[in-house]
Amino acid sequence: MEALNLIDLEDAVGDTPHFRQRLATATEHSEQLASKLKKFTRTCKQLQSSAQAYAADYKMMAEEMKEFYQLSRPGDISSLEKGISIIGDRLYQLEGFHKQMSKQVRHFLVSPVEALMQREMSRVKTASRRFESLKQKYSQALSKHSNTPKSSPKFFAAEEGLASAKAEFLNASLEMSLALNDLEASKRTELLECVTAFISTQVAYHHQSYDQLKTLDPYVTKLNATLATIRTEYQESHVAQLDRKTELTHQTVGMGVQTDSAGETDAPTSGSHEGYLFHMEKSGRSKTWKRR
Image (tube, rainbow, N blue to C red; front, side, top):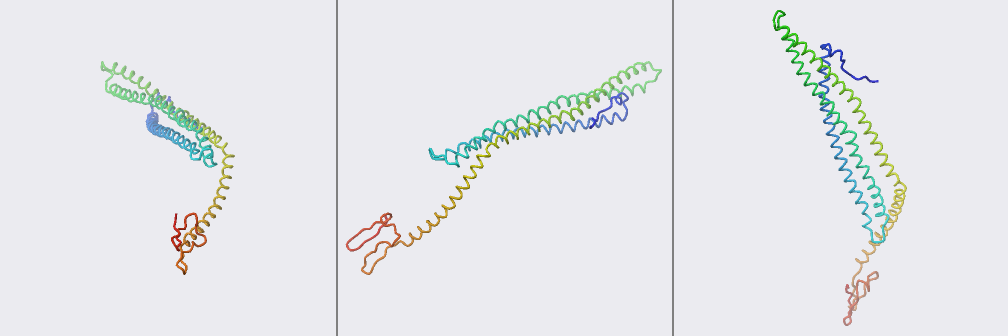
């Protein structure tokens, strides 16, 4: 099991060089941690906003899919429009899960980290300011005591001042050490707890979404079979349409008015659209086919 990297309070009592070095290192680390946590919460808030936008856009897409049935003729909802509408309705039901994503980011990441920063970081900053102030006061009292001869009438006052400054400094050292130790413990426990809780909610979120969509499997399988049939039938129909288009094109090009040796106009050649697109007009001995 990994041990917490805590400051020994006994070192604080002795005010050893090792303690001062540990305190400086831990203080620097707390400042780096504060900067990192601020960046982390900003990123989480961006994720929260993205999740909200995703939920809104997903809902709009599902609503559009649900309304695909409007493209069909009244009383004749084809498998295409009906299938898209049914799938859209199921996707619309996922809206609640998508909204939960945003709430989970806020509840399990943003709020706990901000609370940690407010509680522990504020305490460290307050303790650090007090420590630096009393360290300077203790240093001044120590200097004054050293420079005051024992025979001086001021020596007793200097000795009392030193004892008082040392007691205050010791209290500040202990408070600073405890604040940094609590921050270290909170970082190791509370932050990890937040992340693991968030992962658990993510597992539930994706699992519920999967279960909701998995119920569509039989229907999607049926739709795919229908689509394969429709595609095959249309390909056959498309080939027939192309053949008919070629035939009609040739008939139109071959259609014309021919004149015999007597000067009379013959009827259109076979394959013309007599009686449909053309009609015959007679004038004397001549016959003329005119387009309707």
